[in-house]
Each structure stands twice: as structure tokens, then as C-alpha cells.
Image 1 (cartoon, one colour):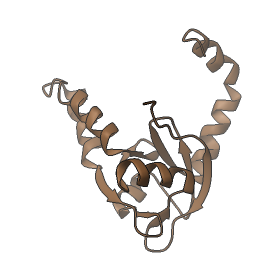
Image 2 (cartoon, one colour):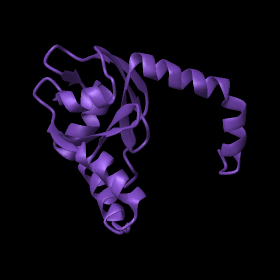
Image 3 (cartoon, rainbow, N blue to C red):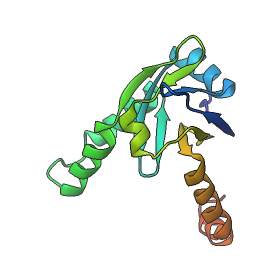
Image 4 (cartoon, one colour):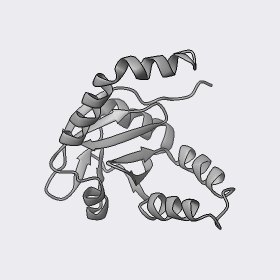
Amino acid sequence: MSAILFRGRFEHSIDDKGRLSIPARFREIIVDNHNGRIVLTNLPRCLVIYTPEEWEAIEAKASNLSALKSNVQAFLRYFYSGATECDLDRQGRILIPPTLRNAAALDRQVVLAGMLNKIEIWGQNQWNEEIQHAMDNFDQISEELSEFGL
């Protein structure tokens, strides 16, 4: 069985109650393969959605990190304390808690970006900055990735 990957970019709105509609292409994968369950957490500048299986793999790797190292503690504090399990509602929406919306500076307009094994949720302005940075540095980035066969 091949891996099920998230690809594509979609612009959506967060409603006044903090609900976000998951794009149909992503929703089909989540409902058909993961019973409509996801794990949502924060990264610097955006939020990220993982499938339960992907999240379990991350937790397994993280549990092998040395909890005595301050950088590991800082990572766990930031990344894991933001984690919340979500179920898609009947309309294919998730409720993004206010703390996570604030952590990623999400306003009404957001971009959902398929990133292979996860989905990122960006505020429209932060996304535009990120894409502009990638475009401005595309030659250098491409050269670095060529070492990996991309």
C-alpha cells in the first residue's frame, strides 16, 4: 500500500466561532483513512495538521529524545503543549482553539497547504511572505535540494 499524501494549496476562511472547513481533497483522505480524526498543533508562524498515525510516529521518535536537554524540553513544551485532537464535524470543519489561532496569528483568511505527510495552516499574510521568500531564494534552494536528487 502506498503512502497517502496531502498536496495542493487552498484558500479558506475561519468563521467567527473559530471553525475552518477542510478542503474536500484533504477531507476525503482524513475521513476515508483516519475516521475524520486529526491532531492539530503549532509550529512557528503556522499550525500543522497530522493524521493520528503520523502523530504517533512523531511521538515515538520524541519519546526517545533526552528530556534532560534544555532544547528538547523547549521543543516539547512548545510543540506538544499545543497539540489537540480534533474530529471533523458533519460539514468537514474543525474547531481551532483560540490559543492556537493566536499562536499562528491567524485572522479570517487562511491558506491550507498540503505538505506530503501533513497540512499546514497559514494566515494569508504570513503565507504570502513565506512564498515570496521561497521565490526570492528559489535558485539557491533548488541547488541545495539537488544534492538530495530533487
